Image (cartoon, rainbow, N blue to C red; front, side, top):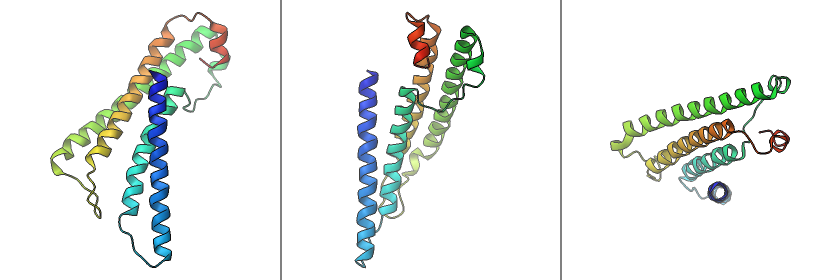
Length: 163
């Protein structure tokens, strides 16, 4: 399931980045030809929401968020595991709060039918995607925290992989 989620997020993010580049490319070429194409920036902005949402989920699933090990590498393994688990729980809390805030903002703007200024593209789907990405990230952090609470069958392999 994790592999499928990573693959879906990678495909969505890649397509969004390609669409953003294509929109910008067409806009620049048109500008050089003396034609004004409206809405290129709006298309790029919406594509960036998809790309960032995908990147956030992929980084979380891979465990690729930045972390500093100056303290934990000097601690006994049990204490290092405990701090690692606390860090995962704090990550879950952070992204749950961000998701709650985004959900609150979404609920406040739900009836407004927000749209982009030039093309009139609805903003609600982008807000929903971003809120879902934050919630999914919180869930992944939470799952990792509970997975780390169980003793490993191969602690040496876990240590080699930074788990």
